[in-house]
Length: 283
Image 1: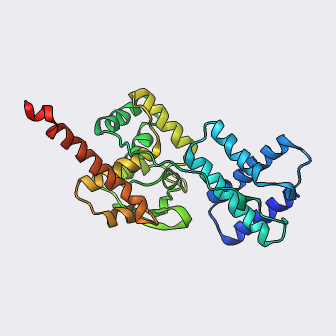
Image 2: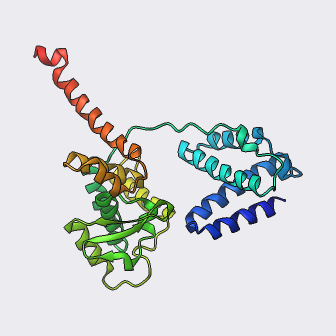
């Protein structure tokens, strides 16, 4: 029965036209839950799934060290699946209705320093065959704020003079401008290269590349999204407005973009604390 429920849902996703990456996220969530259930009871049927089973699965994800966003992503995928099964009459009741959505803790924005970015760019020279590609990837992430997935799926045909067209979440497309240094690097990198995609990197490959460069450059806690955070913070600090930043980042809600405003306020408050603290004034 699991196979029929899974196949029917994947077919519905294809009919809806979701992106291949979105379909993979749904499939992984279903496979992981089914694997968890089979480990509990190989004879467990689809109609036997209870809220406690799903809560147990989510708890196991946390025990294995999965981050809040991953757990929430799995929950949302499973919720969509079970509501589909309920509408199609494939389950007698919807077990996920009895499961509360996982809490996602909002962590403070920690952008890279300019020195950290320069050190990672310089570290690329230790792998000469990959140096220009790695430097180009960092330049695009840092100077446009594009997502890891958007960089990895960037098409050659969507590169224009001074701009690139990326496909974000929900297949929403948007144009991003390139400042002169990044534009020149991209033009240089593309000379003599063929292929449909600019980089030919998977998201996993991109993360591995960043970890490799960060290890060589001694930059802790490095990951692709920190470049996005760094771009957003720099954009506002350099005088950019919040609405334009929302458009640039591809945020559906302005609430998501507001966290970068809060970072600026907290940084200014910290500087003011140092300046106006009693001991500082006593000196």
